[in-house]
Image (cartoon, rainbow, N blue to C red; front, side, top):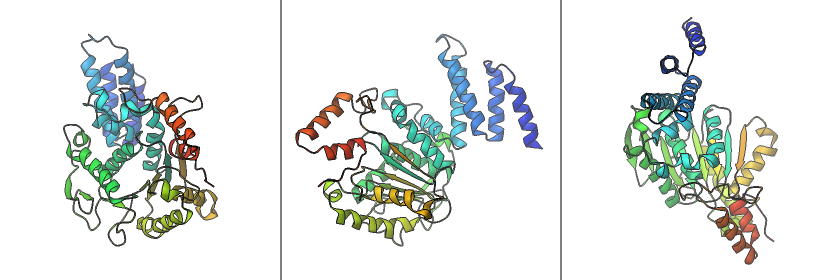
Length: 360
C-alpha cells in the first residue's frame, strides 16, 4: 500500500512545474524515501538543465547546484555507476578529473559496466589502446562494487605481479585519499579493516576468510588463496608481443586461465571482465570469446564486446581528450606511420585498432 501511495504522490509532483526548486526538492525527497535511482537521476538532470540556463548572478544558483549534487549522490547510493564517478570527483579541478574529460570515449564502457551491475550482462570484453583510460575506469568500478557489496569477494589478475600491484595501489588511492575522492560522502559506512601489500588484498567491512579484493599476477598463487563471488577481472594476461606470437605460449597461458583463474569464480552473481590487447586469435581473450560465441553450452550467457579503436572511420582519434589528456589524431597517425615503415602493420592493428592479425 505504501508503494501505491508513494507512486501516487510522485505522479502528482511530476504534474507540477519542476523548474520551481521547491517542487523539485519534493521529488528528490520522494526519490530518497523510495531509494529510487531513476527518480534521483530525473531530479539531477532537471537541475543540470536549469543550472546551464541560469545567469551566473542568479541568487538561487547555489541552491540548484546543491540539489544537483544531492541527487547525484543519491543515484550513486542507489546503484548508478556513472553518478558515483561524477560525485567522488566533484571537488577536483576539471583538468585533474579522471572520468569527465574522458567521458565521451568511456561512456559506452560505463554503460556496459552498469549492465553488469544491473544483471543485464554476465561478461564484458574490452579493447582499446594503452593509456586511454580502460584500466582507470575498471579501478573505479571495482571500488564501487566493493562499496555496494562489501560481503562479496572479487579477483583481479594481470600478466604479472607488479602490474597487479599497480591496480591494488590504484584502489587504495581512491579509498585512502578522502580529500581527492569523496567516496565516504557516498558511502559513510565504508571501512577498510585490513590490507596486505605483499598478498595485494583488501578487506572491507570486516575481516573475512577470503578478502574483499585480491590482485594477482596470473603466474602467482591462486589456488586456495583466492575466491571470487562477484567481479572477476582478467587484464592484459599476455606479456606482450613475443608471447602473443607463439601459439604454444598462448595456449599455455589459456591453460592457466582455465585451470587456475576461472575456477576461482563461484556462485550465481559472478561477473567477468576481459580486457587488453587483442593480439592474436590464439590469445586468452580470443579463446574465451570464441567459446562464448560458438559453444552451445554458453548460449544463455549474456556478453558484450566493446572495441574502441585509436582512429575512427574518418581516420580521426577517438581519444583526443581535453586538457592535454589522451592522444591526438596526429599522434596516432604518426604511430601508424612508424609501424608501416618497419613493415609491422599487424602490431598496429592489434595494439591500436583492436584487430587480431596472425603473422606468417
